[in-house]
Length: 418
Image 1 (cartoon, one colour):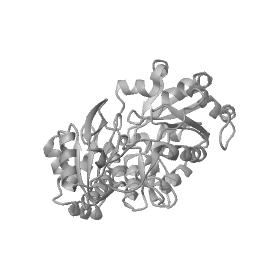
Image 2 (cartoon, rainbow, N blue to C red):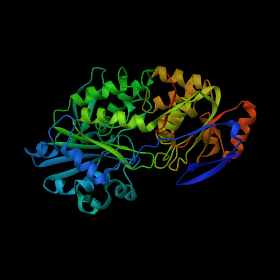
Image 3 (cartoon, rainbow, N blue to C red):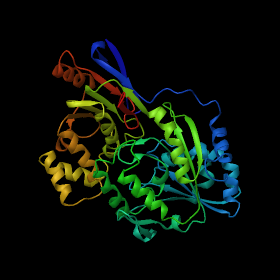
Image 4 (cartoon, rainbow, N blue to C red):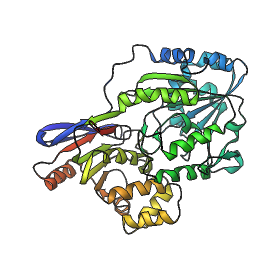
């Protein structure tokens, strides 16, 4: 028997599986630790930007700077970047905006996770984006796909902007980071809704940029922003430590980070399996809306007719209400897709992705969510992961193979030589 420690909440659950049934334990790849301290990696990147003059030159012609940072549901090492730049920032008139997209505002604990030791000093200069408050938004133009871009007025009126982000695979935008600071990060609800409707396309998928309508729409939106932007993109290793840092233009730093991100987050496997256990680790286990990314990545390793077991606390519930309402009010996955075809609302892209999986696979989940709620959205509740695993192995028989994705929201399984 092989013992597997499966992350759950901020602890672990141990399960046992006969070795003949173990198809692998996949997580972000182990890469050599950075030879340089994280703070120095940041400072080196600022001095040696990939496609623009360095940060000092960027700021030479102005004093006011708006820093766009991710919210607390992202693993971005914002505090390390800011602490590294503290001396540089002190020379300027700095404000911050938390790019929440449609997420809630950070909690006090999350503010400290985001800003670290500098929070006390800068707390009165921290603003939080709220996509639903339209009197805080300003229209700046329409993308070629028809997305009307309304951005937070603090962004539109900024003299100069610094974007701090992290790059890892994203199941419909291709990758996180870069342009996402603006759309969805600091955009109005209607703009995000119009952009995310494009996620219904089969070309909107993980690792895909060229031809991906979501990414291309985001880049169109960024092109409408007539403000100098400097960008710092980080890539974390499997231990959530900074592996590499890239600085420069929004596009340049983002693209420079992709190769590094792929080396960590894309894991080759020999073949698809019957059962996938996919984990949404803290903090991405906040709700089902976020944890669903682990289902999207897990399905890439799953055979048709297979079983996917999601492990995610969903400690704050389901998330976006439209996503829940559509799934729970539908009799079948086909009904979900029919409803979306008649009219899209934000969150429906998530429902569509799930409905498509339900057509060819069984999905179960170990969460803190109510059983009836899970059943209403076509997910089988799991209370004992070992029991669910044993039952799945029995169902598929002696040749059954099980794959564990222990960081499923960011690990992308790829069939080798494809």
